[in-house]
Image (cartoon, rainbow, N blue to C red):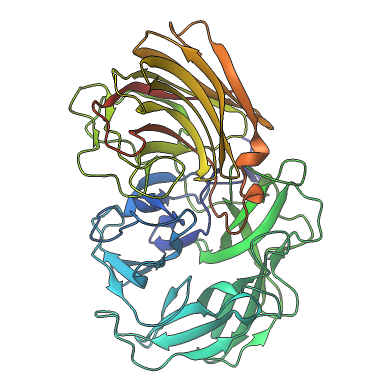
Length: 512
């Protein structure tokens, strides 16, 4: 009988737009959350027992009373959640940027329901909670901007969110910009303060300090404990980490990274990676400082348990009463704009006044792109006769970057059209007159290009247009671009509600 000496797993453990991971443990179970920005529901939550295979069990923020993103710009909304488990209760703390600010919610079951927000008074972004052995609870959070970015900390009453003292500055980082995503831990008698630094691109790194007191002063380890800033690696931008000890006493880190095409861009956005943590003789944790320890294929001696491998692709037939958890909406969907019961076996979407080119109420339901080579297709029925109404399939980064193929009414003519929106300018790439009110639509993604296609019979596919993948990458966006591509079904009245709904029979996610 052969004894397995190592276990191999693939990074990222959550491919696609799942950035800013945070992790907690409850017994043999592990739970992980990620940022969601302008998408709703907010903060997807996953479960695992082996740290490798993760199954989504819901969203933390799934009600309007918890999260209102209806007026949020792209890459605003929910930033960098932290999840913690303490004394039978789960806590998730985060920031609603341009909204209510820093807050936390609680649950006894991580699949929900979670409480309404408890707002806390201080901090910029990326708050974290630390439950100390003496019963004190600390909020550790970022404050300031760019090179002035630093970490503040204060105690709270965990039942009410009331601050028990004025915040104090405990950590100023390593001299780089954007000291953010801080976490405070107590390990082997030391308090460790860990944070990201260097911004979210090439210089992104994770730094750490320690002290005998939760408020410092902290001795900083001079070198980052995680970065690929000086490596020609397929994985870049590493940082924003969280630590966890498993039931075997092994330590791990989850963190974000990107897989760049030609060392330049990625349409998948920032993804979640996993690596073991090694503690040196001086008591410092180490993950990978430009040495290549973080790989696409990892080998470890053991993992804490076993979990089934999730299916990331396949067909949604819209036969159930609710959409699978992998689905997400662009901001809060308007009341009664979406239904799985109006026409059983079909997803119905009522178009709203908002368009894909502007923030606001838009009928859009989609799934994150999780593979660079994939295709998505649907059967659409849309019986509009009103000029300006359209429905279709879209590859979306934000309002300024998206490609779509659709069925639309233009004056007295129904058409099948392809649009390419690049840096805020929309090009009508192709228009084909038709009499059909049912059409098959498809988007194919190769590594460097998206192709927009249609079919009238589901067999013969006709190419309408194509657009460069680079233009749908965060690296092509001016300013902040924190998300990745989401492939969605959409309908709009271009300034008004649509006269009829669009019906989608299925949504198929396939690999090329």
